[in-house]
Image (cartoon, rainbow, N blue to C red; front, side, top):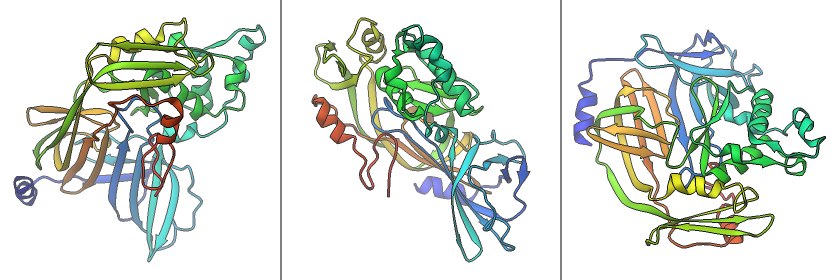
Length: 357
């Protein structure tokens, strides 16, 4: 930590930030820039919605009185020292003594709407299931994603009945795919939605490098040695195991433990995967971007670590992060009902990549 603080105090470089609503610079002083990206567990389920917070000084009331919900906002570095952030969409605003505090979320927030299944009726009218690829195309068009894809194979083995999609939200459908595939949906820099799969993530190469950082706190490793799949429609159950003692991944879904073979596809990808738990309080990004979706690998000197949560702050002196991967307790197999209880939403507890404070 002392090394990092000494370096920051002696820093001679600077960043020049430009905050934009749409394509227009805000034109007023701003600060307290913070990006938060996190996934729960190993990064093997749910939807990761990135969060961007910032303050504006609003002398005239221009921003405190305007209707700004869902207005796109992003951060740029004027001298191109890093790439612009992803597009975020304003969700909340609070005002105190001419300071407007804004909370904005990335494009994954658009999954919170009921799925329009009319483009899929061509399958249902023939008594067929809708292939996952066609469902994802319908989601792409409805939510305005640039594209929808997966970092690993397996989605082609999933198909949906009309009953599974009627009255469903986009979020619930994406979460069902993530559960079967053992991945987490993240927003890409160019407005796409990608399922970043455990064992074969979207960000394979390091996305940032830090030469100056506080001490890395290593918190143990876990090796995935067993996959238990339960079909929630038929109660069929399939297990895959290396025969070793280690972490157990449990999947409950109508798309597993059936004839499609998706269980084997997932198992080939995750068996033997070693999850390293760690944390670091503060680091100075020497190369990389201000906005880092997770899961993502970060270099600390010669050490590369996969992060499942990152908080990035930026000011004129640099880009700083705290990051890590939380220790997991997946040694024992829990039945379906217990795992549903474990995933319940509770105050100050992350569940399904959401936390309510």
